[in-house]
Amino acid sequence: MNPYVFMTDSDSDLPFRYVDELDLGMAYMPYMVDGKEYMDDLGRAGTQKQYFDNMRSGAAPSTSLLPMGAYLELFEPVFEAGKDLLFVAFSSQLSGTINNIYAAREELLEKYPERKMIVVDTLSISAPQAILILKAHEMYRAGKSMEEVAQWLEDNKLRAQAWFTVDDLKYLRRGGRISAVAAIAGSMLDLKPIITETREGKLVSTDKVRGRKSALRLIADKAAENIDDPEQAMPIIIHADAPEDAARVEKLLHERIPGLGEVQTWYVGPVIGAHCGPGTVAVCFFGKERPV
Image (cartoon, rainbow, N blue to C red; front, side):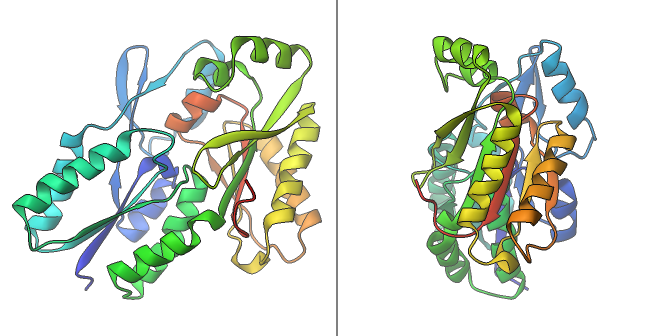
């Protein structure tokens, strides 16, 4: 039995079946819809399509930090049981949530000085974070030490990539990612941004193309450019209720990358979906280090 516990958070968009199969410790992230708070259940309730339909009808979800107290409640039973803790967190550059993790760690290690806790900032969110989690958890199950698993994550985290496009710029504008002027101009010209996770763990637009089909082709091209070993790529397409476009991108990937193997398709979770909006499609994989 491992002397430490492996935990992560729901901003990984890891489907709940993995949580059950791997008995994975999970910090569930909050979001608000019409003044009511919910916790991301990783699709357990089967309401993903309804969530994005509600956004199309005018719902404007918002997100917030998980407070330090929630992390204390999650972490303390681990230390009480005499175990150490490895926490694999989403990017510190996309939220201040990780500071609450650090604060909880500091408080608990004062109370349990014989224990150890490592926090890995993956510089990722959604499926790239999930890819790192699944690969690292395989090492955990194989009995690798907490330090070995954490070091592998640090050495390889920039190899987890995402390339995505959104369908409607108003959601990026609402979240402050682009200006109102840019959103209006882009919508008038049918410009679709190509967005990626950077080496610093931020989200940036690297290209703009005209039309949805061109955007889908380009994210498939980006995957083909950056996958160096198809057998290790673990390709995942995530979408915000755009299954037909996800299937189109999967077909493009197989055309461009011989020997790619199975491509998983998941829904974007409600926290990330609140910022990118319905129709978002992303290609995520393990490959070369991020180019930007």
